[in-house]
Length: 329
Image (cartoon, rainbow, N blue to C red):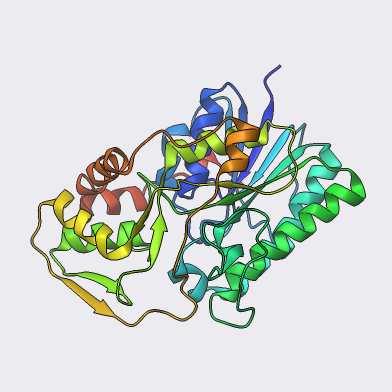
């Protein structure tokens, strides 16, 4: 009998790729999204498949899924600064109430649950690179606190359910991930730079550009998450690519990749924007036998090919397709 998995945030960037992976592995996938930041065009190719069901639902309200569930992957949350600064209350609610509801569902179904946490739990780190043992440096009342603290609470309640109820839980601390299906206007570094390049605009670097990021291609990320779900390890695990680069150097790479001649312009660094971000993946290597395989040049070429082949007409057409017959309320 095929195993059955619930994926929340399924119409988002990572959620949609996870749907693809589990369908490919022979699972029955129950996808759920309230579509605040997700987009049905990311999963439209799965509609009509016998082993795929979509529910248009907000997990901050009571979550009911009929039938057996073997696994739950909780990926419902705004994940970009533009989104969580625009909808801060919803961001806090999905990390707290939403996580509580899904942990309760996992307990009811006796299902294993994987929680999508983030490198943002480390805040603006005072330790470099960041290992899972580092407690972080987070401004609880800053503008980014709505996301950072939602994720930190999410980890706490997940471990409480694990320890008190004996629930099988997994926690993935996801570092910057990129690839096809990212939104051009979501405010994250890669789609922001590529969007500016495609529009012929100068590339905007915040601060002096010496701050660093480490970018993981989505296929590598999904492989790490899949292995973590099926592992026997309940404490947090960093899933990311330790290949670190400064934002200024990365902007130069984008200009070279896109073959454009834009300038780089500098703007003030947003409050609490982390100056360094690099995962220590020793735990993932040891426990999961996982490390990223796709180098940045290869991953960025695939990502740029995806974006440059999107036309405004195609996006408009996708947004107005009628998916109603595939949606369960």
